[in-house]
Length: 197
Image (tube, rainbow, N blue to C red; front, side):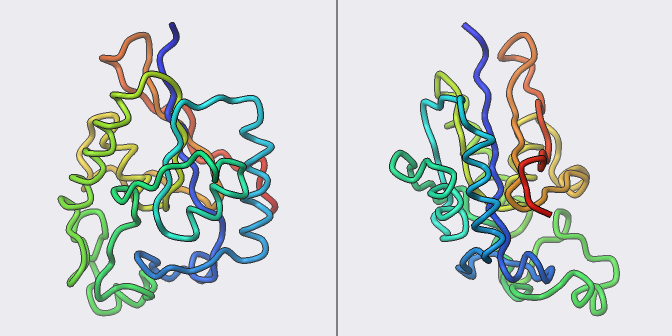
């Protein structure tokens, strides 16, 4: 039996992902291009079979899941929510750094929102559940959370590593194993060949 692969789909474009505003729990819809690119994920995933599909409860992830063709089988998982940005919700990094020049999300977290340790704890819970599934899994979530999930999957510390893993909207990534279940790896990262520019 081959080792399972966990496919990570970032949601399609929203108005705030386009403008660079931090979008945590604000439940924005996809843009028209976001919808088209989410539909293109269906073609990219054609031929793959998943024993489980999970999605964040936020509409941008759920809609991406639906347009990719997995809405009827997807299970909502609250641990897949995007980072709670608290007071930084809706703000751009440049605006935050005008007040806090050395601020880094993955090191400092957000006042009134989640700390890196809290997001890492959610990711660790998700990783434990994913490792218990026998077979390939597909999940739909948001950019910063998926970066945290990936670094926790391979056992890296969040604060110094997650910021290095960029993710585009409607991208596809995958984590899994090399040779054995004791060797977790990143198999694919930020694939966007299917995405309309």
